[in-house]
Length: 342
Ligand SMILES: NC(=O)c1ccc[n+]([C@@H]2O[C@H](COP(=O)([O-])OP(=O)(O)OC[C@H]3O[C@@H](n4cnc5c(N)ncnc54)[C@H](O)[C@@H]3O)[C@@H](O)[C@H]2O)c1
Image 1 (cartoon, rainbow, N blue to C red):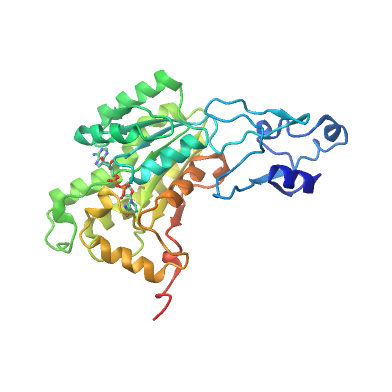
Image 2 (cartoon, rainbow, N blue to C red; image 1 turned 90 degrees about the vertical axis):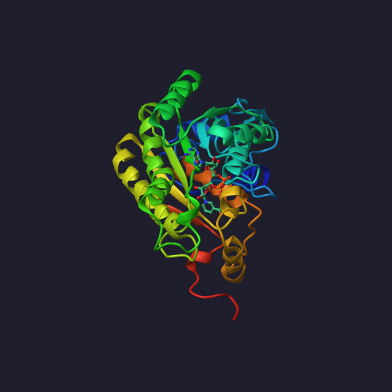
């Protein structure tokens, strides 16, 4: 059975035994014959769906596709698994600004993988975000939400409750630091500027989690934020680096406080990406060059897709046991002690 299914469906069933607690996924997987022969009773743990050539999760040919598509379909008398990583998920994605935004990749991949999404941005950035949102596979509107304004967070939660009744997760892709907080003026930066950086880039994760909690606490869910490795001091990153250290800590504390609601909270620590926020960091090119010398997998500052995919994994049920984690998606840079070549 295994080899036939693996060939035809590109499904890897790696270990036998044990009741799979997501019965929904397995329902309809076995043919009646297989069920009769007891296969259903010794359910196999479904470890991973196979990859297509572009690395995306794929279901067998003949399975209904698209948002709201049928969960299973039959071909040759055999039921099929749901095909998409985020099928049926309702997700809030903040921070989409341009098509280069990391959040845009998360939104695009989330839609491709079956999620329904809502976007937010604020002020003038919202108008640009609205234009960008038209380039998604399924264009959506952009709700107004300044992450530093609890009343606007509440208004978004209210709107999402009307739309969906609940929320399965959200992406925090929000950062801002006044110009005097970055670029080498670390010793002179006044508290007022530092406060703006920390409030917008770290504290807002707690604000957003607090606002969305009523929509997530019944069924649980996943919170993901975008980080730049704050375990070390970088040149030029200065108070933004301190803010990211705060973000990582906020994420861990949220993991602690929200675990009882089955809500997971994780960071994706991305390598440098040429976005609006990225380019506004003085010396971004030096950082990018450092990556090209040290990351064993290489690093393309113009491609946020690997980061988007990792964030979608964390938003999905495939990361159900993961919380309080910092997942580095940086081509391996963080794990190297020195450059690859002298
Ligand atoms: N670009 C990189 O190299 C890089 C690397 C690691 C992590 N990150 C992080 O990824 C996240 C997204 O940034 P990006 O690089 O995609 O750039 P981006 O400029 O596309 O996105 C930043 C977003 O933050 C939003 N924002 C700022 N202040 C806000 C506020 N008060 N309320 C609501 N939204 C606000 C902006 O409108 C914008 O949409 C940020 O947290 C950033 O620090 C970026």
